[in-house]
Image (cartoon, rainbow, N blue to C red):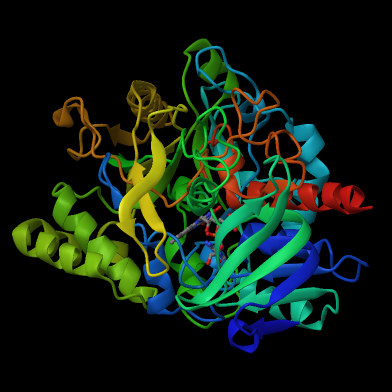
Length: 531
Ligand SMILES: Cc1cc2nc3c(=O)[nH]c(=O)nc-3n(C[C@H](O)[C@H](O)[C@H](O)COP(=O)(O)OP(=O)(O)OC[C@H]3O[C@@H](n4cnc5c(N)ncnc54)[C@H](O)[C@@H]3O)c2cc1C
């Protein structure tokens, strides 16, 4: 059943076996594990079925670290969360084996689960996201030498541009699942011992509130809001729930992104293998079309042996058509404007982009002309787009701001930091990739554009890919993690977290398949727990 908060009178108390906060990829995947069971599940979702500006404003916050996208632009508050049409690009991949391992050169690395134990859940997650065969062979790997430092890493394009729309009918029909829309969780209440969550306070408008009492609770509000909800729940515990070791909100990670270099392909067959058909692939995510033919793409990744011997982070390099823009600011502002307008999103950041375009007219016009004529004029010309893992850093963090939201709760303050290992990894990637391309007979250069090269000195202007990870990290030791391997919050018997906030490290890209796999694993665990 899906209903709106309007139908729930002020002061009501709902009861459930399991209360899930947030109906994004994590919350929906978890709920799907309970369809038709005898457990009563209540999902509360802050947004509605469609994108609404009023709701989106609740995600506003302040960025005080490295420049970052407006916090109400980089995540979506609606049923389906950021895996809706206004959000995600649909690209999916599993994390590598090495991503789960403790790596001596990366402090705080190592998951308390390994990939083998996640594999069955990855398979179920792939089914939910419409990916047919996660292990399918990928012929493009043939273009790279077997014993070189790079391998072609495959990722899949989910044919589901809007997970909420896809699962809506199923949840509507599920008798034991109640979805309440426009219901924003304000704070969790524990008993006097502080070890058991009794209820959650929920609001639809500032003066209309109700409670949910449940045997178990799962926070699935996204990588930033999960931490915020624990921190604002500070009536019984002044530092917030699950924060006895001051870890909640720390270790925030993104996937820093840099565009750089040039590649001129010498053989047309190689161009076919390298080319990521991004425009065609993304069409279903930008319009009403339902299907597309593109099911996979590949990027260049460093082999685990090289990562280990050179003590590097993970990375993934896309090969993109056309040259890399030299006027980075103008080009990026134009790209940004076009991206969000195509997604149908108007936003004050777009005014900022407009101003940047006016301040950099030459670069913006050159970039626009390039985009229009790209396919004809630049056949065979490519640039690189590298996405990197970042090392966990306790000072990269989410805290509560003094500014309040529409419900009177502190907004989020984000301090995003990127450590020196990212820069060293990027520089090695640039050298290795261009060397490999030259060895294959192509023409390739690092210095084709200024962005992401030594021209920027120590401060590379990293961009982001809207992946929010690490703020409630997973570790079996409560001194180094907020949740344990089952995603239960340390010290709280009936509180769990779903989503990429539990990632101790982030892999080299695309968290959503892992988010869904972990949520499915949590669902199976909770079914036993509730028995
Ligand atoms: C433009 C864009 C492109 C992306 N492309 C990709 C991609 O190609 N591949 C990939 O792997 N990932 C991609 N991502 C990231 C991906 O969308 C996220 O990793 C994923 O959606 C996270 O799922 P989640 O359920 O943890 O969080 P969310 O999707 O953020 O869902 C959280 C839900 O909780 C709700 N909520 C928040 N606070 C409260 C509250 N207090 N009370 C009640 N409800 C609340 C929100 O409204 C939301 O519906 C992209 C993201 C964006 C924005």
